[in-house]
Structure formats: C-alpha cells, structure tokens
Length: 77
Length: 77
Image (cartoon, rainbow over all chains, first blue to last red; front, side, top):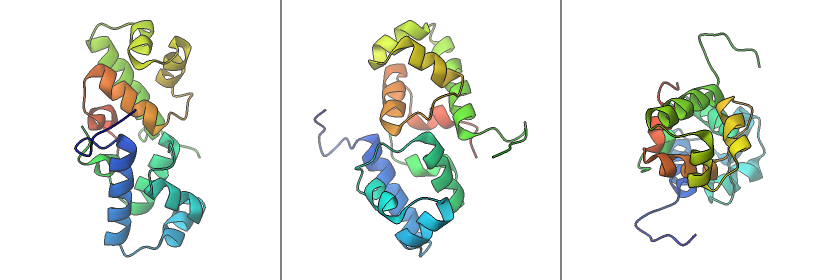
C-alpha cells in the first residue's frame, strides 16, 4: 500500500523507535539481539522495517530495553 | 516461559483489549475481520491469544477500530 512521507507505516514507526532507544542505551545490534535471544541480522532487518515483526518479539524488544511497549510505538497513529 | 496471573503476556493484553474495543463498538468478529481484510477464525484466535500476531495486522486492527495503536496495548508493561 502506498504511503506518503507524512504517514509512516507502523513498521516504520517501530523501526525508528527501536533504533533510537537502542542507541540511547549505547547498545549495538549484536548486544540487543543477544539480550532478546534473537539474531543480529534479524534486529538489523527489523530496524530497516523489512520484517513483519511479531507481538512476541515486540515483547522481547521492550523487555530487553527495559521500556514500556507503548514507548516502541510513540508517534504512531 | 511461565507467567503468573499477575503478569499477562503481551499477547494476552492485546487479545483482551482487542475483544474489549470490538465489543465496545458493537462489532462481531466477522465484521471486524471484514473491515481488516482478515479471516473471522483468525480474529477469534487472536482474541484467544493463540496467534503471534504481526505488526502489519496490529496496524490493520487499530485502523479498523479507529483507535491509536497504544490503545491496543493499554495495561501492558
């Protein structure tokens, strides 16, 4: 589905917030992946909004970052 | 992973909120499914927390219900 620049997909909102929160904690993709029990290349692809990430993995990301799930969707409609 | 009754999984939080918001709008599972372009049995299984629902479908549910994504995660850690 075509989307304007003004209306990013939920994947894109999530990808941006994930990277932002990871950076703010000084974590590498490798380290975050390790904390989540996921693969480093998977984390990279989620941060590029290439993956249709599942709710179970969303929960892992929030847990590993120590943030509320809603923080990963900040800015979403 | 074992969880206490006091700490529902994110799937469970989402399932409960989805059903609650659907009911509050007087929608059947069939109608919500139709609005989302998903199958009725799929909606039922998501509401029973049986499915590892993806971010693209989370976006469809929020859009169909006319709610913010964060509303579907209300009560999540």
